[in-house]
Length: 512
Image (cartoon, rainbow, N blue to C red; front, side, top):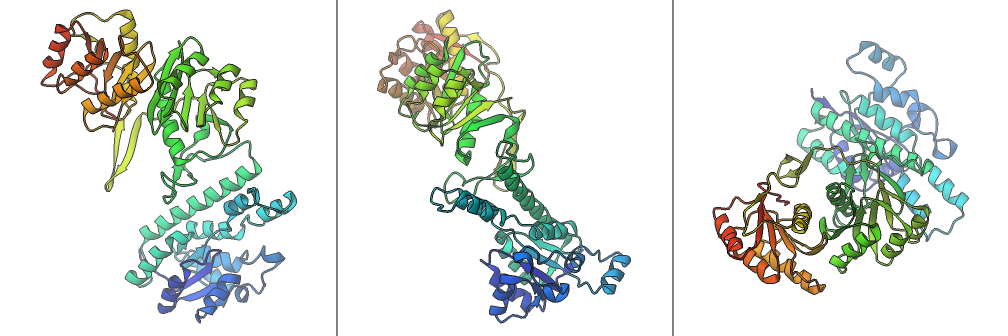
């Protein structure tokens, strides 16, 4: 159902990119209604503009708080073009038909950040006044009204859509389809919802909202020049006890950390360090402090700036040890009071308690012009087939189970070297498996680990026997891998000949 734009109401805070829109509307003979600074902007372009106050017979009053809140304005927006009674009342009360509403919102979040900045020199009372005056009333009302009536008019609620509007005006000569109007209405409701959430969070700092379907605007994406948005409800999973807002990269690493720690049942204290979604240190021990010490020892260089996660309550001794390094995020079951006091000494540290595990059973990612979705990678091994030159020892079995879980959470190609339930070397993200193994052996040497008696896990099969040969030369005595190579026998034969243990699991753990 095509609709032609013959009239437009424009009242925006941001004027960037507005000029091409106004000129196109003027070219198409559209009647433009406007207010305040926007009206002046349009008139300065030598384009005729009808002041909204000439419709309402009221000027902007109460310091600009009331300009558009009037039945004539909202009647023009909400009037249904296919309802005769609406049209009759619009004629009776001289309410103009409005086909396009362009309204953005006062910069509440930007003002909040400005008033909260260390450089702000005003008093707390001045800061609050500045913030309160940027709570928009008429803007959200007009946007919601226009979005509600999308069957009859188009709503533009953000400057990011100006270019798309100009393109529509140029290519469709002021006509819009029902599908286009509905799409813009959906965007508009999103914008207003996020705005209301920001205001709620200001008034309720202890009860932050990130509504399940709403979008949380992040500081930026992976890099500062990229926009970042999170859609979901983190409050279902975490209680945030301290620190700055989670960034895009924080959230990606936190997700990896939670996936990893959920593999460990809590029978032992497990501590892990995540860097760029890869495990750089992990250990399971009888005490949390010991688990932390050995996780950190696995790669103390990479731990700098990492995301930390454990499956226990953080005590004072562990907190004191953790506080000696710089980290971004710490996730735990809970924190003892004295531990929390220590960890809160740095204002930007993000401290989270994990309330429950995410319930998603599938993973998705956008690629090309579509979406890939898959089931989560559940489980450790499908079978336990001992195919080497001897049975695994009890210690080796525990280490192989541990190593295989760790390897599952490294980027492919992945190798994990483990000794006494401590990650002592890892290789990940390499283009060949032997390169990942070389990397893992070098990591172990870098931090003075003795690999004699250690075990090795591989996320996929060994295509040749070079990996078991190099591992054996480094001191590895037991291997775990899914099998499935046409040359499995080469690796197995080498293990048989050299009395090395090998377990075939039948379950690959690629992680791209």
